[in-house]
Every structure is written in structure tokens, then in C-alpha cells.
Amino acid sequence: MAALEASGSLQVCFAPRQGNARRCEAFEVIINCTGLDVLARVSSNPFLSALMDKGWLTPDACGIGFAVDEHCRALTAKGTKQRAVRVIGPPTAGTFGDPLGAMFTRSDVHCCAIYRIVP
Image (tube, rainbow, N blue to C red; front, top):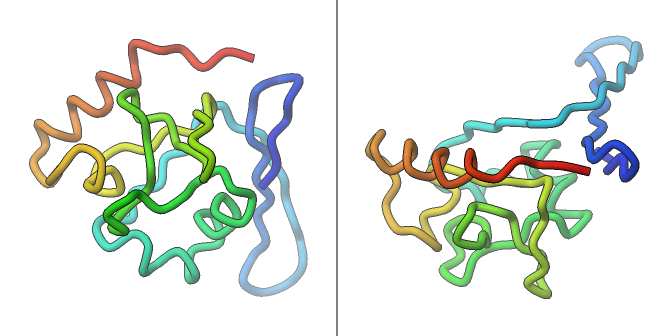
């Protein structure tokens, strides 16, 4: 996982479970739908582990999800808004409350959709 500053993209490298044919691609948007108890699963999720290791994601004050601002932008430990990293759904429970219903997730997506991620 690496930020491609010039393009505003995130580069993700994939490796198959068997063999060593590594492939890297750049993405404008990455959606990870892991469900509840996100922090307990970080160590077993290479994508979330990489974001946490780089400081792009931090636990929220409640310790049940990730710290985000009012527009679902991930916050660093210092409170810096990550314009290229958005968190929606259950991982925002510590900030926005219980997002189990579709209407809550829909409103999270809507608040993100009004902001375009630009370089």
C-alpha cells in the first residue's frame, strides 16, 4: 500500500496465496466491507494492517472502529484528515453510532459523495 502523491491514487500490491506473481495496481477508491468488530480483525487483514501501520487509519475514541471526521475522512492520530481515505458503515460506529441499518450506511455514502477526491 502506497500513496501516489502526484495522481492522488492509492497503489495496492497483490500476491497470490501460492507462488510469487506479485501484481500492483493504482486505485482512486477502495472499498473494504469487513463488518463489525473491525479493530479485532486488523491483524488478519493485510489491507487494514497496512493503513494502520502507515498511520492513515487510527482507532476511534470508543475503540470499536476507526476515527473519522463528519465527512467520513479517516483521521490520523494527530487528527489530520486523510482526503483520499474514507471509512463508511460499521467501522464508523464510534463516531456516528450504530450503522447497522441500510439507511445509516446510505447516509454515510451520501456524505462522502458530495466531496470529490482530487489530487
